[in-house]
Amino acid sequence: MASSSASHGPLAAYTLAELRERHSAKWREYPPDVLPVWVAEMDTPLAEPIAAALVAAIGRGDTGYAVAGGLPEAFAGFAARRFGWRPDPAHMRLVPDVMAGIVEVLHLVTEPGDRVVINTPAYPPYFYWLPRIGREVVQSPLALTPDGFRLDLTALERDFAAGAAAYLLCSPHNPTGLVFGEDELLAVAGLADRYGVRVVVDEIHAPLVYPGARHVPFGSLDAPASARSITLASASKAWNLAGLKAALAVPGVEARSDVAAIDAEVSESAGLLGVIASEVAFDAGEPWLAELMAGLAANRALLGDLLAERLPEVGYQPPQATYLAWLDFRALGLGDDPAGWFLRRGGVALYPGTKFGAPGCGFARFNFATAAERVTEAVGQMAATLVSRPRAGVTRALNAL
Image 1 (tube, one colour):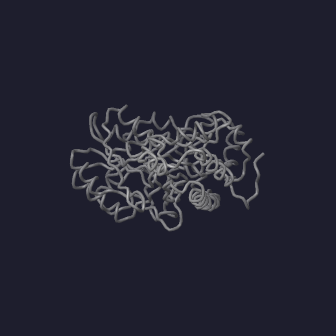
Image 2 (cartoon, rainbow, N blue to C red):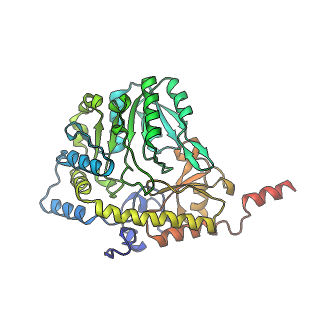
Image 3 (tube, rainbow, N blue to C red):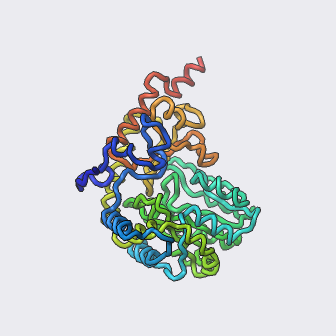
């Protein structure tokens, strides 16, 4: 049974043996001797109000078809408290998850063959789903600066001007953890207005922003592109509900007719338990979220310390949001797929950077939403794979002799 010790927070609630009893992708994709720090699942129990609501639903056999119920109002209240933004619940539409919502929205606001701009490195399912629905992916790389990744507005304007129909904005950004400032987003909105680009926004990580950064919902901007935008939002990442399937399409005032056109069958593909859990998360889950964020902030700092000590050549910019670290292994000379190296030689599963687009070569994503000792163990196992191997700089020096 999970520990309820508040002093250790939700990230420390389970032992490794308990986690290995889970049936989710994180714990079943790889053999039991592999330590998984790859996919975006957290090693936490459910927030108590969510668990209680789900137990009650099961007790009454409440497992029929989904309706949005009070979820839109709950999200609007959360967004008002958290971000100072209160979108109109009456115009939101239930969708199964954020990716399914993106696909449905792009079906409605673009045509087959249209170009959709994404910032790379980018969430891997974008590369699968957009071509599958006949849309062309345009990779607009983030700028890599000495201080880490940044939005490249010059590149974005170039790609908008080349004939883009839509821009799929991931905000906060996965995998880099960037939180875009209001000035940046207003600049994006200005470009979208100038070139007639519809903005579709994936804000699934919005609740997971660390102190020092502030999430600005694109839909809250005072700009025509914001009024024409559609945001996809969900409780799934912040409260670890991905398997329960519920999200919302949230339109700007000029996009309400587009969202209203989402077929009822799409909404019915959401999970009723997901709706119940998400409504409770947005209404009553903030105390648990605050405790989670404290643990994540500690792990974010711990990961930086461990890398500096054990793998100092690895580039690491602490994310401003999410529980995902985008690590630059290029100085180690491990090739395009360092995740493959650490899986084969260290028994640690990271998410391969190559799946995030061309700028992901030499990178990998590390999920630190777990107990501190497992973060420590993962970095230790990774470092151990390099003990008997010359560092890249040494190898280059030897090759030059």
